[in-house]
Image 1 (tube, rainbow, N blue to C red):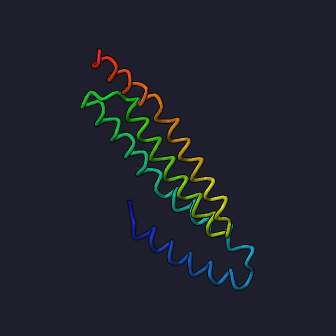
Image 2 (image 1 turned 135 degrees about the horizontal axis):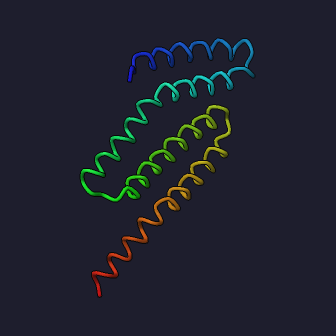
Amino acid sequence: MDFVKISLLAILSVVGIVVVRQLKSELAVPLAIGVGVVIVSMLCDELFELVYAFYDFSKEANIDSEAISCVIKVVGIGYLAEFTNNICVDTNCKSIGDKVLFASKIAILFCALPIVSRLFELIKGIAL
């Protein structure tokens, strides 16, 4: 990952967005969203490598891939929710961003439900 490129792109974009906001304010938000998407797309290769590394670790440690899959989904939901919330806040729609964060928490709970269910079955098996 070349974080220097991402940082330079972000700094130049912020300067550009500030200028565009003064000249034609309605173009600032799509420009900011576009830059955010470009930055995230620059990270995709590294994200895939990270996901594969987690699966390799789980295979070596004999950990169920469903648990690792759940962790990866939860992290992904969290990052996507934060990214979406930040866009909402930047566009003065904080209340919508708050609903996105709430929805992400519900999605995380549903994602973790099979793991929690298995945990309760394990506890019930030990108690008997």
